Image (cartoon, rainbow, N blue to C red; front, side):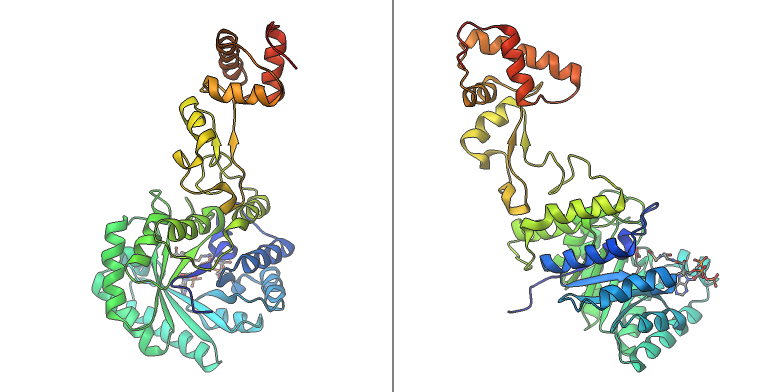
Length: 379
Ligand SMILES: CC(=O)SCCNC(=O)CCNC(=O)[C@H](O)C(C)(C)COP(=O)(O)OP(=O)(O)OC[C@H]1O[C@@H](n2cnc3c(N)ncnc32)[C@H](O)[C@@H]1OP(=O)(O)O
Ligand SMILES: O=C(O)CCC(=O)C(=O)O
C-alpha cells in the first residue's frame, strides 16, 4: 500500500498521560497501544523511559508486542534518557530541546550554546547506537524565528530524520501556524511534525494548518487528553482530514468511539457530551426542527453518518421536541393521538424535562401518555 499522505503519531501514552492526575498502569498502557495499532495508527509515542522502572516495564511490554505501528519514546537531550530508551528495546527516539528564550533561560540559564551541545551529544549518541531520531523544538511557537530555523537545520545536519514543531503553550492560531510551519518546511529537507496544544481551543485547527503547510506527521492524543487543556484530538484530526480534506489516512474510523471509551476509562477523564466525534450528543437530535428533518434525511443535520465513527443516531424527546418526533416515537408503540392530544403530551414532556433536567426515556414518555388517559390512544 502507498504511504498515506499524512501519518498519525499518537502521543496519548506520553503527552496524554501528562494530563494532571492521569496515571495509566501497565495493562492500560498495553491495551491502549494495542488498540491504537489495531485501528491503524502509524506511530505511537509510548512514553518516557527516563521516568524509571514502572514506565520502562510498560514500554518494554509494548515493544515486545511487535505491533505494526512504529514506536518511539520521548527523551530529554540527556544521554541517560537515551540509554533508558535503548534498554526498553526501542529503535526510535524523540529528543526534545527547548528553543524559546523563556524556556532556555529557565532550564539552561540562557546558555543556548550548552542547549545545542546537549542536543548534539544526545543525537550523536542515539545515532551511534543505531537509532532513528526525531528532534523536537519545544516552545517553537514562541522561539525567535531565525533561531528556530538554525536549530532545525542543526538537527538535520546532525542526522535527525524529523523535526517536530511544538506549539507548547497553544498560543498560535491556524494562520500563524500555517506561516511559521511553512517557513520551516521550506527551510529543511527532513519531514516536519506538528504538535499542538489546546489552550485556546485551537489544537485541532492548528494541527490541520500545520498539515496544510506541509507537515508529514501530526502528534495527536485520543480525546485530546494532554497537558493543561490537552492536545489535538486523534479522532478530530483523522475525521477532519477524511471529511473536510478528503484525505484517508488509513485509520479504521468505525473504532474511534471504542478507542475513546478505552482511554476515557483508563484516564478517568470523561468526555463531555458535546465533544466532537466521540461525545455522546454528537449524533443525538432533540430539537423539533432538527428531528423533523433528520427523520426524513439525516444529512440535514449530520456532517457524516454516525456509523462511520462507531455511533448510532438517536432522536430523543425532551424540552425542545416538536410533534413529529413525539408522534413517531408513540406510533412505534402503537399509539396514535390527535393533534390536540399530541400538543398536550408535548407540554407535559417540556415540563417533565425541565423538572428532570434531561431528555426523557421512551418509557417516561409512554407513562405521560398513560397518565393523560387519551381516549384515542390505542396500544
Ligand atoms: C513540553 C513537555 O511536555 S516536555 C515533557 C515533560 N514530561 C515530563 O516531565 C513527565 C516525566 N518527567 C519525569 O518523570 C521527570 O521530570 C524526569 C525523569 C524526566 C526528570 O526528573 P528529575 O531529574 O527529577 O528532574 P525534574 O523533573 O525536577 O527537572 C527537570 C530537569 O530536566 C532539565 N530539562 C528539561 N527539559 C530538558 C531537555 N529537553 N533536555 C535536557 N534537559 C532538560 C531541567 O532543566 C531540569 O534539569 P536539572 O535537574 O539539572 O535542574
Ligand atoms: O516533543 C517535544 O519536543 C516537546 C513536546 C511537547 O509535549 C510540547 O512541546 O508540548
